[in-house]
Amino acid sequence: MTSLCGWMGSPIAELDNEVLLNQMTSCLAGSGGNPKIAITPNSNLGCIGGRDNNGLFESEDLMIAIVGDMYWVDPDLCQASSSQGLISVFAERYKQQGRSILEMLHGSFAVAIVEPRKGKALIAVDRLGIQALAYTTVGDQFIFASQITAIVKHPSVSGKIDSQSIFAYLYFHMVPSPDTINQGISKLLPGQYLEFDRGAITHGFYWQPHYQERSVRESMLVDELHNELESAIQRCVDSNDSTGVFLSGGLDSSTVTGIFRKLSGQKIDAFVIGFDAEGYDEMEFARASARHFDVNLIEYYLTPDDVVDALPMIANAYDEPFGNASAVPAYYCAKLARDHGKTCLLAGDGGDELFAGNERYAKQKIFELYGHVPGALRQVIEPLANATPFLGKLKSYIEQANIPLPDRMETYNFLHRTPAEDVLHPDFLCDINTAKPLLNLQEVYARAQTESIVKRMLFLDLKFTLADNDLRKVNRMCEAAGISVRYPLLDDNIVDFSARVPSQYLMRRFEIRSFFRRALANFLAPETLSKSKHGFGLPFGLWLNEHHRLKDFANESLTSLRKRNILNPRYLDDIIKNHQTGHAAYYGVMIWILMMLEQWLQVHEY
Image 1: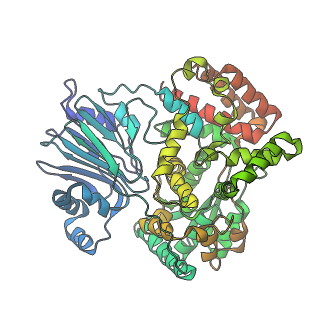
Image 2: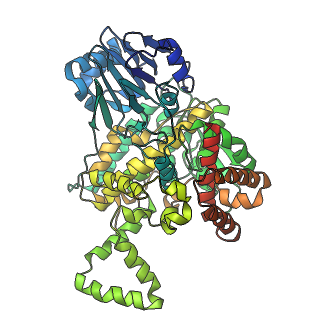
Image 3: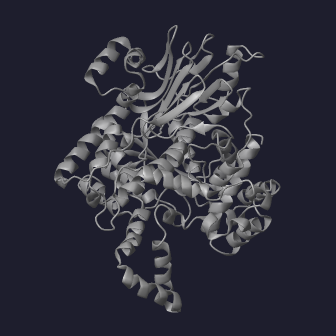
């Protein structure tokens, strides 16, 4: 992923523009070739350009930087770009249309536009948030970058850690946008733009999913899906790229692998990570899919030593604390591909959030049924369930069903199962609003333009599960391994298509991925179609009890974290004890979250 950064405002007296640019970009890197650096003293804008078809535009009154894989759909714009260059056409259209040009952009991109004479700037990211941009204002300075660490290097920015964001990390295992780990710095949301006009800021969404529930024959949608999948994967493969594919053996990675194989007309290379731990290894499913499509499967079994070796690098790769343990296998899978000569990988991320593939969707539909029980009957059922011990499961169901969405989806959360005063240090608790994470969820859930419960959950996950978590995980780990990554299932046409599939097709009763599974029934391997939802989990909790080096690393991290007065010391003791004597996998999750927080704080010198 190629990065950009820049600023506008009064010159910094102690630094000339080039020195400041180098200072900010020292932490940025692109995975594709040597990035170019350009600067114009009159605008005080510095940036790292993108791929050949994007890059940098400069004139006396306008400067534009675009990174990523942006493209047009409009035939006239495509034709003009083939002769004039994409960024030149973009600049011409921006002068004519202003901000509305964003609605015509497709693909993954981050764009920054500066008009120094007017004191104006416009920044935006793609519809799904594949690319990232963060920003801040300090006085008349407007500072932005693909990575927060570049902004912190600007001398006007304090970079102070935000306690509220640490709490958000403990809650979500990452810091969701628009917040960041640093006070005063914000991240753009998917499909969002921000305008800076002589110190005033306005922001909004140039795109949101347009969900529909119109009646249409399912067979027509099946044909359309196949066509869109082929077109999307074709767009993701450059003739100059040495491209491979992530293959776990699940629906999404197998679909991408199979269609890529079909379009290439020859054997392709697929890469998979295995775990020597019962209940975690999915290698047999990847092998079944590889046999079915006749592809070369390149395997690597991850070890606890691999985890310990990679942890400092992983903590350093993220510009905020990041607690998704599957970053480790993602890194080693990308590294495996790089070691075998690949420069690009296709990933299957996004299918669950577009086509209803997460088990919690079915679970929440079951809870929603209680809302249809007449009030008079509830007045009989609820007292009976509360008073009768052997109806404990019914009582639990009623308690959860009475919590509205999206709050109900977080009832399992560590920070809901235990009172905040038992989890957090008293001094830390005084500085935060424990209700903010749910308010963040509620704001996004309410913004979904649909009455469908299923599609509201999909919309929520496009932001929290995909943009804030999975894409951040894969992007950074591929970059660390020296690999570029593309997401065919997040092609704009497929996203628009999925929004038109009626909810009743997406999930038939309580069957997740109903439509997608039926549509690909004659294409995928039988083992793939019958495979239950698994994920890409790391057996950290199990290994922690067995591997001394990993255990020592975790203990040292928790000992250091204890001194920061973030967690209640008794809570740390209980987590360690429960992990050793109870459910190792369950409590191992929180130990990983806390360990990675401490590692991030150490590596970034906080």
